[in-house]
Structure formats: structure tokens, C-alpha cells
Length: 378
Image 1 (spheres, rainbow, N blue to C red):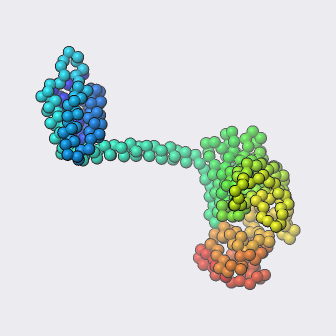
Image 2 (image 1 turned 135 degrees about the vertical axis):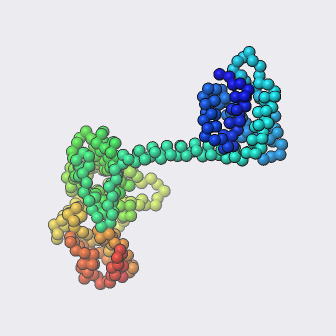
Image 3 (image 1 turned 30 degrees about the horizontal axis):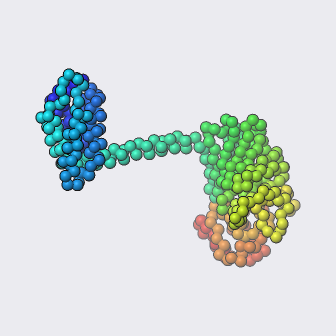
């Protein structure tokens, strides 16, 4: 379809108004209609805008250079579809040239703003589309978290049960869980009772270890602020992969592995080790020990928390303070440095924080002050 001279003038007038943000809604609709019927005009308008971008509009004489450039390539801009007709008349082109010059001269900053806005709009669409994709992905993630002072029990889609200790969180993907594999991520402490399924391994990801099971009961402790991460097996079997060492260790029932959260400062790559009886003269990075119930309280310390018992054996006061923070949900500060290395053993079930501290101070005297959400020991 070809435009008559009057219609062509109308098109360029509407385009100029659009670029300078002076077009009304009716005029934009008219321009849209012209473009629908004349697809070749899209290219012409785009070329004008692209060429305009290549010039520094604020520099003296560049606007005239731009118009000369347009005139030089006018055949690319204003070619009629009817090959028998001549190129657009010079007077008509001069009218368009004058119109474009006047619009650019008055609205050059507006046009540049339009270009910037188009770039920003494209970026916004990309950003929002990415956010939408992330939102869709995040909808598939189930996350269970417990605050200090709270514990909870959940049942996973495969029927496996998880008891989550205070200050912990467990994540798994609803879209993938129990398809080919059962996979969760843990930060904190949890006791697992996994439904046996030899075709679908159950894997727990922690900071230092990946733990693979088929069907078993075990406890995993992996707090980021503690010196060691632990996995304690009650029944079944565990395959523990140490991430930093690319090493696998198989645990038997009533065995526990402890892995240091902090690697020793060394220039050499750590060797694969499996220390069952560590040298008491140094702190090992990996220790595998046998789990033994407490002869005094007849309780397995690693899973005492699942029975609602605050238990610690020959533990220093600094670590006990962390346990109490999670158990009671209050910040604990030991102001007296000499108290941090004092060791205690205790088993508490329904006692308050004040009662626990009152019991501990019987063997080593200290004072404490309990606030609304914190406690100071001195």
C-alpha cells in the first residue's frame, strides 16, 4: 500500500509528535493504523532515530550535518512501492526535512529522553521477567525454620519424619523431592527417621558434609557458629561425604562423626583421614567415635533434645551458653572470661533458665542477671 502526499505528511507529523511526546491518544491510534497498513515505514522511522543517535546534538553544526546525512540517503528513507513512480518529490522531502528539523530543534532532549526510557523499559522488562522466573522457582522450595526457644516436627512428602531443633532451618524442593531422589538442605540440628526406599536415596546437604541414607534414624548437627558439625547414627547406615576432602566415610549404628567447621591454616591440600582414636595432643579435623549412653542419666546425649531434655556432659560454660540461647530463646553473655572454660554436666527437662543457672553455680560460684530477652553471667 502506498501513501498519498497528504497521508505521508500526516504520518511524519504524527511520528514527530510521538517522539516529542506531544501526540494525543487519537493521534497515536492513527499512527498505529498507518504503520499496520505500511510495514515498510517501520524501517524508515527506525533508521531516522538510529542515525540521530550517532550525532552529538549539542555540538554546533551537527544538526545541519545530520540533515545533510538524511538527504544523502533519502532514497533509503522515502522509496515508494510502485516502481513506476518516481522518488518522492524534492519539495515534499524538503517539507519533511523542515518538519523533522523543527521538531528535533525544539524537542531534542525529549527525544533523547525517549531513547533512554526505551532502554530502561527494556531493562525493566528483563528484570521483571527474571524476578518472575525466580519467584516461580522459589514457589517450589519449602522451608521450615525454628527460632531459638522452639522445636518442631514435620513429615516430608515421602513420609519421613524430621524433628527440627531450635535455631534451625530445613529446605527442600517440592518439584523434585521424591522423584528420582529425596534431597534436603539443613542448617542447624535435626533428627531424621527416614522411610526406607532403596530406589530413591535420601540426601542431607550441610556446610561440611553430604549424608546419604536409604532408610535409617540419625541425628545431624550443623550450626554455622559452632566449631564442629556432627552426624550420629542410631540405626541403619550412613554414607558421609566430606566436601572439602572428597572423602566418603561409612558409619555403623551407634557411631558418630565430628568434622571441624574451620579448616587448619595450611598451604598443602588436606589429606584423607579417618581418626577413630585421635591424638590427645592436638584437635583433629575428623573424629569417628562410638555413641555411648550416659551411665548417670541413662540417656544418649546426641538425641536428648528430641526427648525435650537439655543435656550436656563435661562441656565448657561457653558452649553451654550457646545451648541455652537456643533452648530458652534468650541472648546469653558471659562477662567473666574465666568462667568460659569451666566444665559442667547436667540434665534438665522442665527447668527454667534461672533454675538451670542456679544449679550450675553450686559447683562454681558466679552471679547472673536475667533481662527480658537477654542474660548476663558474671
